[in-house]
Structure formats: C-alpha cells, structure tokens
Length: 160
Image: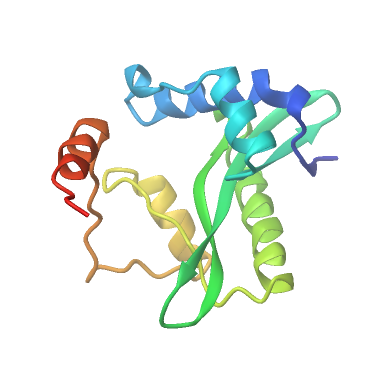
C-alpha cells in the first residue's frame, strides 16, 4: 500500500533524481540547476519549501514540492504547489490524486484560502486530471518571470 511522508535530508539524492525525471517529462532536462547541496540548503536548512514523497515499500513512486505564499486580498498564506510528479510506470493508479489530497489536507489544516499551481499549456493529461478534480484554470492571469540575468539588470537600476 502506498503512503506519503515528509522528506528528510537523507532523501535529497532521490529528490534530485525525481526533479531530473520531471525535467525530462517536461522536455527541459538541461534546465535543472539544482544540486544536492542547493536542495539541502533550500529545503532542510532555510526551509524555503517542503517535499513529500510517495512510497510503496522501499520504492519512491513520486513527490510533491510546495511552499506557502501570501494573498494580499485574502490576508492569509496559501499553499503553492511548485511540482508534482509520479513516475511514468505508476501513473493512472490514483497516486497523483493521493498527493493532491494530502496537500489539500495540509492547506485545510492551516486555513489556507487558496491551493494553487501552474501547468504547462501542452500538458493536456495533467490539465484534464486537474479539471476532473474541480481545479479551475485562471485564464485571465499571465505568468511573468525574470531569470538571473534580468534580475541582476533590474536590481542594478535600483538607486535607493
């Protein structure tokens, strides 16, 4: 029987492996910059994010990485799912829903008014899966991003 548990520092190698597997699935394997060292610092030292692992016996089937953001309109923290991934051979067995249900329980317990995530436009299997659970796409919002170079350029313009 599958179970979900909070990751510990010793899980870092498998977390990085799952991140790399996710990057392959999302057609971006060369974009992974994370290392075991950066993950340890971010997740287990500075506690910037949390990870749960989905396991059956000694086999890790998938994971979810999440953190708490803040809604100025709601005046409360919400749960933001950065990544959810179930290894290909285990998909279609309810494990993704199990992970999302687990996170929804955390969001409910913490009084989060929102549980949000983004999904790639081409990822129709995931989009259909999320819609089937009642998730609503926010078509009126556009995601913006500054990468490292743009962050540095914009930061250099601050004269405060």
